[in-house]
Each structure stands twice: as structure tokens, then as C-alpha cells.
Amino acid sequence: MFSKACEYAVRCTIYIASQSQQGLRTDIKEIAKNIASPEAFTAKILQKLVREGLVTSVKGHGGGFEMTGQQINQVTVFHIVKAIDDDGTVTGCFMGLKQCSETHPCPMHERYKQVRSDFKQLLQDTKIQELLSGLKSGESFLMI
Image 1 (spheres, helix red, strand yellow):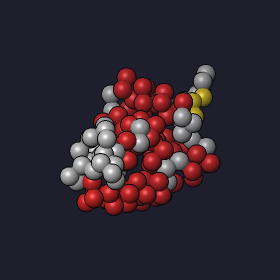
Image 2 (cartoon, rainbow, N blue to C red):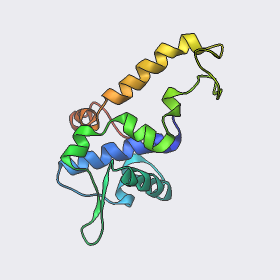
Image 3 (cartoon, rainbow, N blue to C red):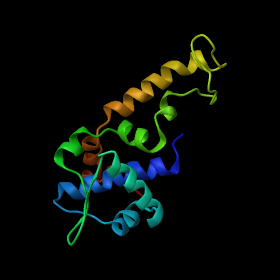
Image 4 (cartoon, one colour):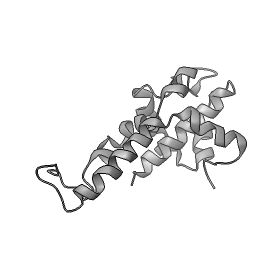
């Protein structure tokens, strides 16, 4: 459903947030290693996340990527999806038609409308802060 870049972006953000909560900054090499993502691809993703204000980049000695407490508490999965894949992934037509609407529906429009709405709401309601608790307890993981 999401692009590989979007999947990595969510994992990047969660990893950076987990390190930030421990008072640590992390670099591209460490992020890529801990989320099983190619470094160059991770760098491009991080550029977008920084540009959108979802994570912070600190330059110079001791620099790296971090998230403020406010970012950790306010950034949602939807923010990340929108920054990387645009919101068409969760607002668009199930069949990918450009002109799908209530007045010009695709064959799946009526059936998919509620699913799409519920899924978008789930992404908007899920904050990075909430996803960190599973990591801490060992109930969830960022890679195999």
C-alpha cells in the first residue's frame, strides 16, 4: 500500500524518536543499520522529514538527527505518509482513477469509501509517542 520510502520513513522516525527519548542524536549510518535500509535511500528520506519539520537535523560535531519532545508527541503517522507519499495513498481512488468521486465513482468507490476514511483516521490518530511504548517493552520491532 505504501511505498518502500514511506515504510522506511516511518521506521526512521520511530528509531530517531526512541534515541531522542534517551537524550541521544543518531546519524544516517546508525539509522540505516537499525531499520535495515540502504544509507543513500535513508539520507533522501531524512531530507524530506527534516524539510517537513518532522525530525530535526543538528549539524557539526556531536550532530545528527533528533526529535524534540513536542515533535515526538505531535507527529502522526499521517504526517509522515503525507511528507513521503503525499496523501493520495489514503485519500485516492482504490483503483487509481484520477476522476473517481461521488458523482463519477469507480466500481469500488462505495465499498472502499468507509475503509479509506477509517484508515486515514487511524493514521491521523496514531502519534509517534504511542508507537514507542511497544519498542521499549519488546512487544514490537523495527526490523527482523
